Length: 260
Ligand SMILES: [Fe+2]
Ligand SMILES: [Fe+2]
Image (cartoon, rainbow, N blue to C red; front, top):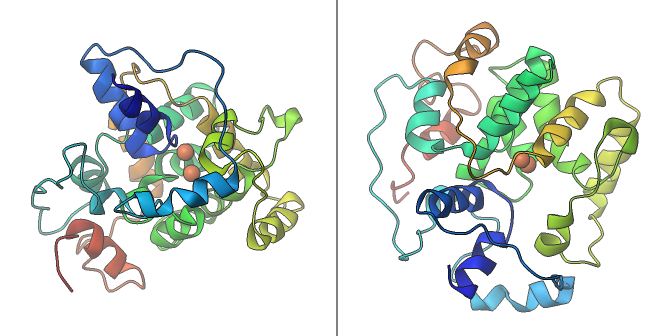
């Protein structure tokens, strides 16, 4: 792997980055690490903005791969289910599948397993403030504890909780800058959720999040089909066709090539 490719793969530990790392591992590439790393400052990261042809918060479906171009997407079935979206739009979804696998193995509640399974899938559409985007996308279809877990995992990622087994992630120094402080809306959300009776739902999402970046792990959606069946209210018309307040978000994920 070239130095630039390594830096790219390490840029942020998000779905697409892990997927790239998975691709490297499958090609027999060495997993990037080596030497002590000097983390950027917030100002240094801001200085990189105009070196890119995309903004860092843009959804994965809307940016090109390593060769610069996007790929033609497979057509969605007329009444798409959540599993169809996993297979045709979120794939390989390695990070969320690893998170949910860990949650399942450690005996967490089905609401938490489902939250782990879904927690970053909205990265396909949008990464900025993805806790809120993700919770909104799923709210009509999942238990309240699950959408609560999705919404606030983004916030709790910035706050350590030793007792729960969660440390501030080393990778965030790289992604946000070594001198980064969460903005006021994240600070306010933390205050709210820290004292909430469901604090542990998003906290457990972060606990599973932290250890879910093994590019060699083999995962699949199959172990979660039953949990999805029990807790995901699949609309009979298909996601995007059900006139719910978020149907347009599903249609956008299904057809990001629509010009307007
Ligand atoms: Fe996340
Ligand atoms: Fe995550």
